[in-house]
Image (cartoon, rainbow, N blue to C red; front, side, top):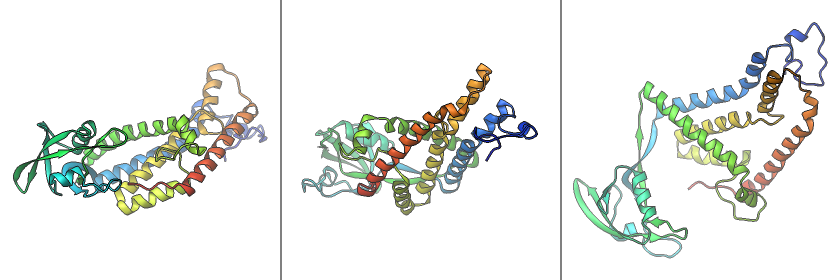
Length: 297
């Protein structure tokens, strides 16, 4: 607890120079931001050591598994019917070169119902197979394969660069999750109006469940999930809303710009409203985590 940070706390003249209000605006800024900064640093350290010591999984254009039957219809998957086998490396589809899984996945999704010529490398030989992609309910194409995962290793400096890229991409994910909280579709899920999906707020119950599932998949996905959680906590605490740290930062900035001290007691109603929102959000999300838990594919 920082002396004088509670507006109800009495601070004597002899203690004022060392209290929260007695130090400079810059000192107050660093006091408030230190918690979020420590979460951010810890997230980056965990991500860096996971990337450097374990390596990142990379989805390749080599077939890992071939599905045999489509459960909903009982039909053979297009991949199985075409003769695709685990270990086949997809070189091209309809003459378009494929170098990674994302290119393969995008092509499949974008060509529902079409007949596709698939050139593969199998045990050193090139074979051309023909598959007719299924059309899923959402309109996407479906072949019925999953990729083989390889591990890409990085040097110390390479791991630093990869951690930076991870930070940028996961930060986008955090900000997108903020948007999802205030999205109409999320509200419908929380209120039980629509079917719950994987894109929804989670409580500690849901987070623990996902963490357990990822731990079964290996150390790397578990550590990266932990890093994401720390990154999320770092950013959400900086939202400019009392009683979050971001609310205190907003007060510091306003006081610095106006030269006038803000009575924090006047912000109590806002703080209560924010707390009430998070409590209600937690209870609604907890109901989903208990009765409609998320199972990772």
